[in-house]
Image (cartoon, rainbow, N blue to C red):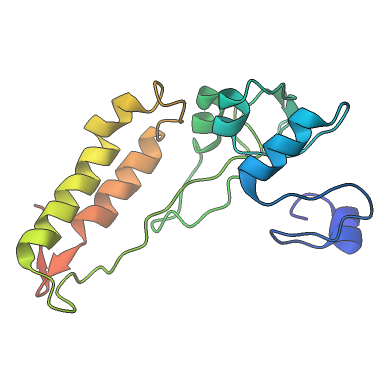
Length: 174
């Protein structure tokens, strides 16, 4: 729907579309299971499912006209763009030359002010330390788990967001 007015008019947009033919399945596991069982079928699953289930996949043309295969590297490259401060961006149809055009971030949603519902300051501090570890030291585990590491720009934006987390309006990380 983002890239094709014809698609938008015929199919709309959303997580569940009114396909005119075929078999639907719920979630990555369901789609992967059906695609693997039905000869000549195709579907869309998260890259980790395609890799983990030894599924074949196709190169998809990105905005710059380059056909890019889905790999952890090409997914990371899709985020090599000017990101908004809140990182709320759709990476589909990325303008990044080597970026896979059907990519997305995974977000964590939490309260900026951590003093709520009897939450201790210690828990709030541990949360911010964990988040900081995830975007720095934790990134070294991405490839072995078949995930895509964050782009440098995404790490910089995440640092600012994590540093904005407070407890009683006091910043938890310097």
